[in-house]
Image (spheres, rainbow, N blue to C red):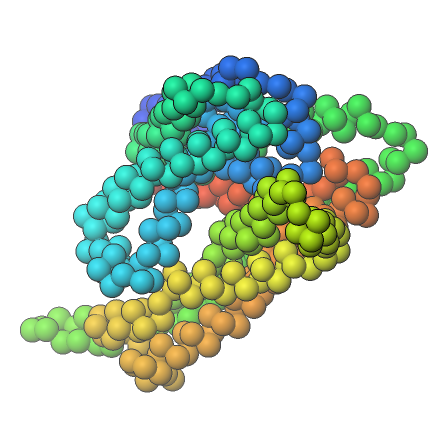
Length: 423
C-alpha cells in the first residue's frame, strides 16, 4: 500500500506526467462534448426502439464511444479507423510487400503502414455514414433527406470521425495510453451512470440475494478476464556464445512470451459482423412482396432470433475466428528465422523448420484456451440475461474485454513512466 501511495505521489508531483494526464483528460472531455451534439431532426423514441435488443448497433455504439446511440456528429467514432486497421492487417496476409513494410522496415515502415490506414479511413467513413443515414431514414429515425442534405450530413459525419481519429493520435503522442482505446473506454464508462439508474429504477427488495449473487459473479468474471488477458506461455530461448576479439558475447537465457489470448477482442467483432449482417439483409428482404421469399425470410429470422441457437452459433464463430486471426497475426516461420539470424535457439529444438513447427504446436494448444475463453465471454451476457431475466444484470462481452484491456495497458504505461523517473 505504501509503495502504491509513493507511486501516486510521484505521478502527481512530476510535471511532465501531470501535463500528459491532464492533456488526456482534456481531450476526452472535448470528445464527450462533441458526442453530445446530435444531427438535426431525430425521432428519439424511434431511435431508442431501434437500439433496443440490436446487438450489432450496440457493438458499433461501443466503437463510436457512445456517439451512435444519440446520433451525434461523432456517431461513427473511431469505428472507420479500426476497420481500416483490420483491413490493412488482413492485407498483410495477401501482400508480401505490405507484410515486409510492417514487419521488416522498422519504425519508418510502420509509420507508412499507419498512413495507409488513415487514408483508407476517409472513404470508409463516407461509406458508413451513407449506409447509416439510409438505414435510419428507412426506420423513420431521421426524416427523408434531399440529395444536398444527405451529402452535407455524410461530410459532417465523416469529418467527425476523422477529427476523432486525430484526437486519438494526439492522446497517443502527447497523453498517456493508446488514444483510440481510451476513446472507446470513455464511451463505455459514460454509459455506466444510465445503467445504474436503470438498475435503481427496477430495484426489487425481494431480489437482494440475486443482486448479491450477481456482484460475486461479476467480481469472479472480471478476475478471470484479467487472469486470461495477462496469461502467457514462456518459451525458453538461449543465445549462443560468440567470441569477437577478446570479448565473449551471448550465452544468456531469456524467454519468448506467447499470450494465451493473442487475438484480443477482434474475433468477437468478426463473429458479430458475420451473424448480424445477415439479419439486416433479411430484414431488408422481408419488405419485398413475394410469398415464398417472405416464408423463407421469416423462418431464417425466427431461427436467428432463437437465443440458444444464436448463442451456440456465436460461440462457434468466435472460436473459429480466434484461430483465424491468430494465424494471420502470428508468423512462426518469421520468428524462427529471426531467432536463427540472431544466434538464438530453443533448448532441445533444432533451429529453422523444427523451431517453427514447435512454436506452431505450442500456439495451437494455448489458442484453444484463448478461443474457449473468448467464446464464453462473448455469450456470457446472453447467459446472464437468461438466468437473471434482467438485461441490466448482464456482464461480459466486448465492453468488458475492452475496459479490462485498456485499464491494464494504462496502468502498465503509468507504472513504467513512474519507474523510469524513480531511477
